[in-house]
Image 1 (cartoon, one colour):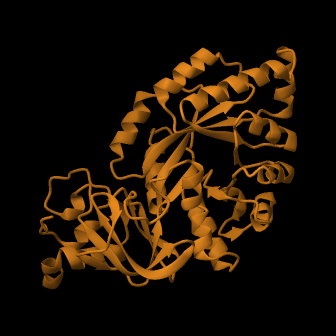
Image 2 (cartoon, rainbow, N blue to C red):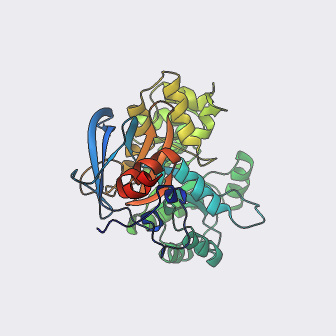
Length: 374
């Protein structure tokens, strides 16, 4: 592609609204380039290497080359636990979530949405407004004991086309009250089985959130809800692992400030009963968990980063991302090795975040005349 004339500091405008200006940084897509000199994550191990980006995909290294010495080149993070903070008067919750996720290295964001909430046009418009943001997908939350008409739910699934769904559980008091009203668990069990079949028919990945007992986990597995989010007991997590089902823990539950807390989620992680991490809170929670685990020496960067990239991508059936493989989406994160801070995030070949250091290195390659003039 033609090398445009620009000032290297123009790159700091990571969320441009006007793409008709001269700077290449004001364009949606990165030009073809190779990230060279960094430590590339392959198979859970950081090795010296180079990664090419072209036409929104990972490609063979070529020219021009951008020097990323001192950085780790990682696949983009896939966050299963995105959630918009309710009650914000300005209605910009999704915008803040997407921006925070981009700065934390998230390139694919599953945003939780209640099944009984209407898909608002305002929400869709807000997504479209955030041009430079992660790939946003919907995770539908369905109450396991909600009295839903299967036809209505099927119609809603067709209209919304969610990428994932999870069954949430009521409190014990609510469960007893609903089961008493419906004459026992039998009617609820049949409805759940029908809902699971509707999800299967549409190819939606689904699981359950907050299983308390081993029996609940076994029942959820029987209807096909084999993805286990935030198990509420060790028995539920152990039952899932015994059946070969993936366990996704909350990074927020693992952290106390910037350190790993002493709690059940951290204990499950330490015992190896964790297949992936999601934020389930602040959009940078998964990144902070990675930083805390690596800084404390508990886990290597390669192993920990896989918990928020390749592992959740595989669990959600996203075969086109989660690894730096030629031909897959160019979802790439640059992390400064000395500080473990995310320096740049690229989603599908689009630069959605870059700090000053990466701005300068990109400018040195694509704007050498401007840089020399300084």
